[in-house]
Image (cartoon, rainbow, N blue to C red):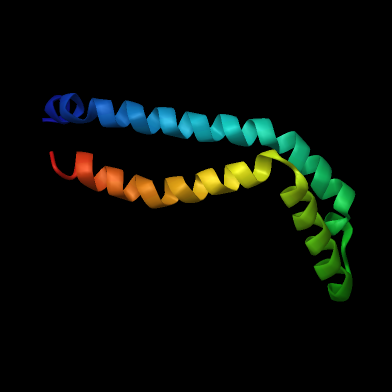
Length: 94
């Protein structure tokens, strides 16, 4: 029975593995610049709650000013809305 199940769903498994690999690669590529911006913002060393909000706003504005991150955000939102529909259409209809 396990062999039959694997044969029926191996395409979906490979698609899921490829999607997770693409997400991991994207995280890996953006890690260094986000880490650099986070360290430069001073949030990590923040102790006073009144200063943390100002530092967080500064960090978010830095991220929004970078050209790649708004595109990644929009792509992430689109994927979050489309993936359940695609799963329902193709995997649930089988």
